[in-house]
Length: 311
Image (cartoon, rainbow, N blue to C red; front, side):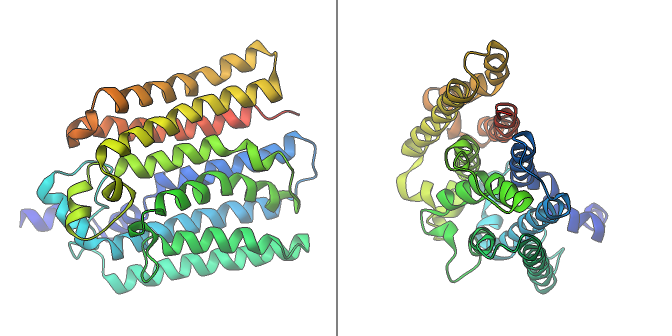
């Protein structure tokens, strides 16, 4: 009886499985790309920009739902070794709360709707090349968990997600809003990519045993936790250094903008120190605050990059 009472309602279960708060890691950078175009005085097509934001939102949901379906084995294992708020999925498919077939169908619908919105954006701007950005992002999101490609077990899924959720959304945001690209886009948004990569990597630490025991050979399983901590710390340091570089090349000598980058800069260096030297990644209990701070750094970095945009 208690188990039945503890089960979430159908609506709650679906909303939880969709991980709506985590869509911010792609939606916010997309909005930053739109803002960059607006701040630089490039004419913005707001309907296309909104359509793009909705498409990114749907792609995120589709990606998360596919993860619930295809990561069931390792998700169940996390119950045995110790779960955190950021590991092992939601278990709502693994425990039978949500049916596999329905979750797959909703994921497919999300990707299909995102594709239709992408087609609308292409037609609005009469720019077929925009399809390259949309197809690349959508395909990587779909293939991250889904077989037969299943990037998550190939050892480079983290890199693809870092690019597709960190660098690609703001670039696509700019392109969807304007129908064009700017040379600055190819260097401006890498700090966001570093933080997204780190979100994926740090969340693999508490899942290390479940992943390795079920054959999910992601990056961390392949290189080990010690090297994983070094790579995480390096990416955190690069985030801070890149922000300093953006300030120097786009906002120097403005002291006001130097102050604006300090929160993200300090947090990036703090995370690098915490993971490289305190070994808090060894325990699920101590790694959880690091996972949370990695998400905070991602959002703070996206906002900071937006504030550094030169108008």
